[in-house]
Length: 277
Image 1 (cartoon, one colour):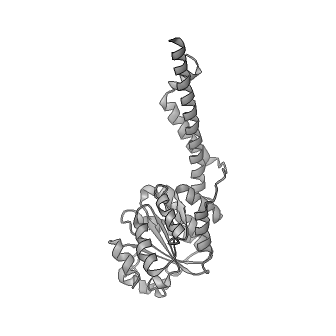
Image 2 (cartoon, rainbow, N blue to C red):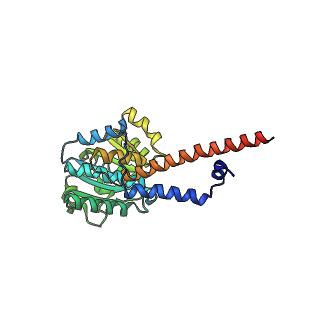
Image 3 (tube, rainbow, N blue to C red):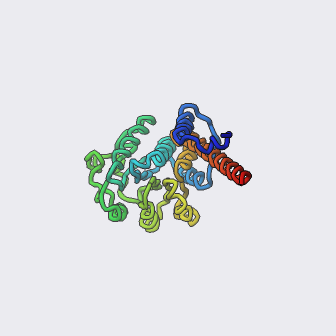
């Protein structure tokens, strides 16, 4: 049995082990592989950067725990930019399972990093059911939809919310989502109130929304882990997405190598069979 025949009968457990090693090693030994910045990511960064310092920005955590590998790094990356510019950040979620907890944990971590105070620099509104009514109602009065914040504190007792009554007091909306709620942010909030919207979505969702960027309904877009890695580079805060892209790139190279070797092995075995006929 020659090399190619042995390769064709390679134990699948060895293949799985090679994939596991290829994923793990870049997480501990950064490879600093190049990551190209897409125009959509750069436009999103520039649109946020162009906002006056201390502007009020609404950041949504519209994603489930199952997609945090792609979406949470986006939230962290944009918060690095927002807090660096001393923006006032209001967060909310339309996801009942996990959304409020994810938002609370991320905001607490980033606020500690930048020394931000709750109620003054940022507020977490939490979750409310019936997202269509929520998005529409906030255009009239945020307090009518969210009488209290995530912790049960009346909005009237939070200094930041005393100056933010509805969308008219919000300069920008950054939506991070893993579902079709982004359609409603565009069709309801952007269409009716003309508030600029940027977004980060999972990789499988991103192709649908590039047309919204081209039409001007969105100021920019991040797609999947690569989009998150691009934003980490733009805000000069490398994190989990950049590390993840190293692993992802190496696994893709390994898969390509397997495909090439597998086809060569198949071609060689068929050629040997024909030669013996």
